[in-house]
Length: 89
Image (cartoon, rainbow, N blue to C red):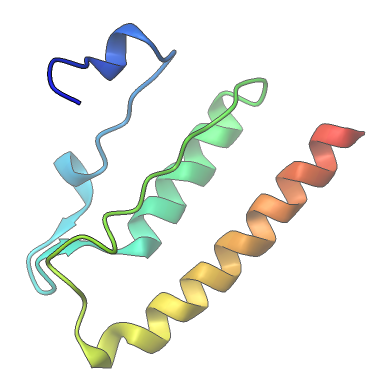
């Protein structure tokens, strides 16, 4: 969206690529996104989050990283499920 400034519409915008970029794989790994999401969830427990992963945008992770990516996605799913349960209590 041209001209959209997220910082004007959201409480906090965390640009993980500023500190989580991994030169070995040429992108931000899902693990770094998970770490940042957990850090800010714990820091701001009453806030809602939009967590945007760089995948499926290029550059794509190679086949040797796919297993790690799948495991991170599973862990994120468990994390989000726990958040949803906590929100309904």
